[in-house]
Image (cartoon, rainbow, N blue to C red; front, side):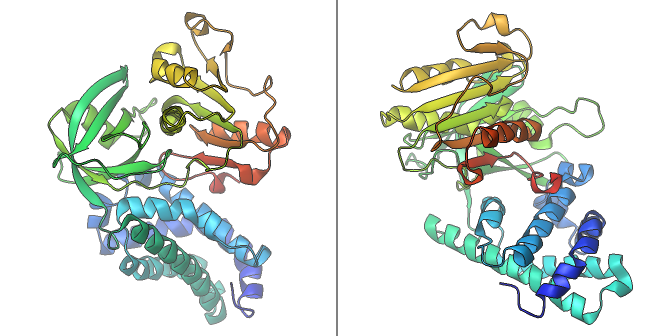
Length: 402
């Protein structure tokens, strides 16, 4: 909780700080990488830095946290911070890194806003930062403890046991421990980080959802090769490397599982809505439900460019057929007629024909415009905002988009 003396200061300065946050975070990263250039090559996503997506996501999370402190002081910030904490754990972030970040972030605030940052203002925003940092440190410490590892000790060496092409631009990799023992348990919907060394010597990290249930001896990830449509940003560095180089028998650096998009243990109805490669965490959930002979009501909505682009299409249909109360609704922008069925539609996905039960829990994964549209429809249909959960690949830009 923000101190009484800092609340009016943060409330008064939040508009000007919020309006300058993108400039502040841009300067923050520049200052950080000038002091620690290896972080850009070994920890941060270089593509997201080049496009500005990471700066935008950081600005959005800081603004949302500060707003929560002054407008809803009795609400715990863990909901806002949980996704960030899980991402940090998947990267092996440790508490000793927070003072470095705080020094450069608050230094960037002072440099951008100049004389407006009086000692009183500086102290108030220093308090905001450390409330956020300490909350993240606490959540991350709990996640490390639950995994039974020391802070940051998340990396393991896993062997590629199988490689399979799922579509023109997606491959799945089955991963196993090199000692033959079962892989670490996880919760359906979680992801892992994969760290590779690129030709220029940089080590880059990306997150990939585990696309099968945890009830297997191996893990599986499905990697879509990210290709820039207009050439304004580079192709995905790690996905391109994995497509070109990862082969059966190779060993990869893979983190322990993380992520808070996980199935609730209650028996309430579920709605799983995905688009494109966003299908992967939903497959893990469906596989788990099928393996446990679940009788829960499950509505699955998936949108894709075409049936040929729909990765794990047959597997998804098979899993749903094994559930007693599940149905599938498919939307294709092109060639919908090539996937005949009673619930196959042409165009962009809509929930117009669906009426979810009021106690439905919804999970969304896919491009941000898709998720925002589906969430809006679900709210209109009466679902509570707390019942709608989402996952994004890359920086979480939801908050920064308002």
